[in-house]
Amino acid sequence: MSKVLEKSVAQPPRMRGIIDKVLRQMFDKTCQALEELDGKKFIEQSWTRDKNGIWIAGENSEDTIYIDRALQDSNVFEKIGVNYVAIKGELPPGMSFQQSGALATGEADQIPSDRSTPYFATGTSFVIHPHNPMAPIAHVNYRYFQLGDGTQPGYWWFGGGADLTPAYLFEEDAVHFHQVHKEVCDKHDSSYYPRFKKWC
Image (cartoon, rainbow, N blue to C red; front, top):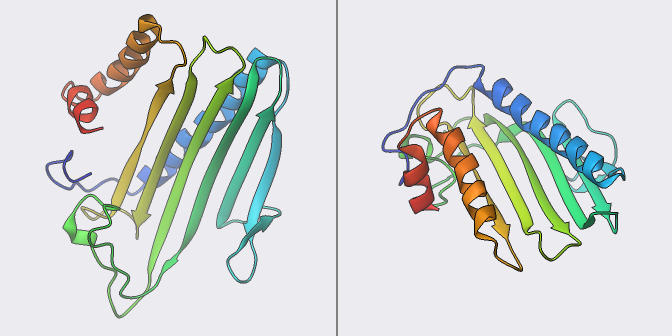
């Protein structure tokens, strides 16, 4: 990420809530649109952690939300897997991120050795396999990670991407896919699309 962002930036304290809301809405609205297109409903499974930190089927808690949804052998789709996660916790004292590529800058390479640091992570992902070989497989994954309140430069990170995998290439699909991403990027900075495209 540091190759894309020339310098680390601070963010408003409420950014965590905004990003989490956007990702949760994306998860819910995309699932709703896929159900409307297909005519069948997703099967949903919530997850929680046991006392040893192992993921098990169960109800979400205030600090841990993990939801999987699946649609298989339906009318339009062979298989779809989607998930949404939002987790709060504490990182142990002295934990290092050096050379992990997890954070954008060096300011947050290591958790202070004298205390733990709160973190928040959220994300959503989709893998969509249609029955029709003329329609491409689609994948989307967006995620956000924050140390503390995220207001210090380098203490938050956003990443992810999207791709199409066609069995039969239709150039207009690729053009449309890239145009939609360019329009979103251009709303914020016209340099984003060419920089991010080259980087990815």
